[in-house]
Image (cartoon, rainbow, N blue to C red):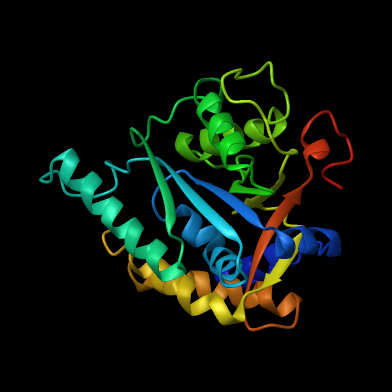
Length: 254
């Protein structure tokens, strides 16, 4: 199947839900968990830039140090970590996100959710977001453990947010946030991101140790197809879920 046909098949699965759109457009405090530097830019860079532009508070939490990401064996780990952090800060600058936190888990060894979710719960409770963004851990055939473990831990942080007997040292002071999964096969909202697409592309381009122009072409092609659903040049797609949809809910995937 050609790339264009695959993209067409992907956007054909998007079920645009007005309530999900409202949740994303009205979020005032946004917390994004990114498995590596660059993941959240690819999945949600334009949305984050749009949130900042309308006055929302935005924090990006980078979970792993990405030390495995540079192909050459010559650089020492600390040199790669420093490079990737610098590229991430440049990318965040393009999106005008000023609040960036690095957890520095070892790249490719981000622990299972039962190990890291307490960190995520502490961050979520202390920041008190109304929207948490991460990558969809249920993306079919996703093999990278950092993506799966980060996504599941973020979802579990939302699930356990309001239960004070779980992680007792930081008590919840806000209601459970809503959840938005990027890089998902089952989106239920498409956002028009025309004014912010160039910022997203510049943010991805800042990760010059990782990407060439080919990924920018793919991102642009997918964003163009998603935007067509809502009558825009460019769009980003997400799976928005309310807290009650992520625990024993047979209807959540409908």
